[in-house]
Length: 65
Picture 1: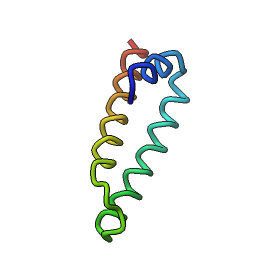
Picture 2: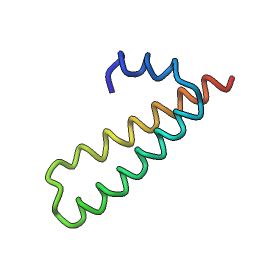
Picture 3: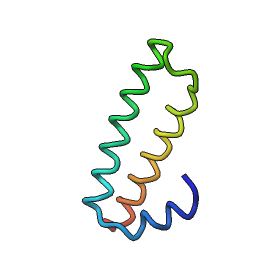
Picture 4: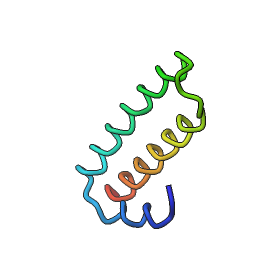
């Protein structure tokens, strides 16, 4: 995720951010199935999705404070 994207996420409300994390978590599960079935060649996708989820959750915690 680029810095520009992170700045845009900071302007969103918590409800939208939590729905975005739910979508990303579903993508992680789908990619895990694809990787285990050898359909997905790019394994880095899993790592980047998890990183994006962590960044979004960090923004949520900062907003709550």
